[in-house]
Length: 233
Image (spheres, helix red, strand yellow):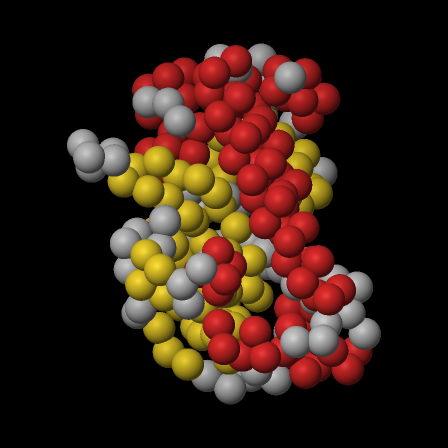
């Protein structure tokens, strides 16, 4: 992992992560004390598919993408994560080869939790274990949704849904609309949707022509979120 470890004050966003939800301040501080911060430059790889590992991560700032590569070399982008979201938790409970590659989309800070520290901390804290189980259940639900979308939804519908998902986490209100600085290339956005770049670009251009959004480099401004939401259904 191309990164530098630094000591820093525990960010508030850490306590908003699912792992910390519902914990009292003593439990939160006890868990945070076992974690360490890692600074990443844009395009730095946290881990690669097939790597061994038993650490999980919480995003404190920046964006991380999770993806896999097929036998042809084509990338499938599973998710783009932002502050407060976790990844790598499967390897904490089942240490073994990583199922995805995690890469920094932008300069980011992660907080790392090792397997042994988490297991020791979980002892006697069933409420925290329930929180992790809920997180894993949400991941499975999202995976099921992705499969359903690939089967039942057309590309413009998947593009609309992806834009709304990115807007929920990275959108910023402005006089022009909801600005979503996703920082993805056109190719990465196509990988996230599960379609060719040309097809995704055609859908985006159609939305722009209809006045639903404005396209910008590595970002988009959603002007009519209601119509985009309808198209996502």
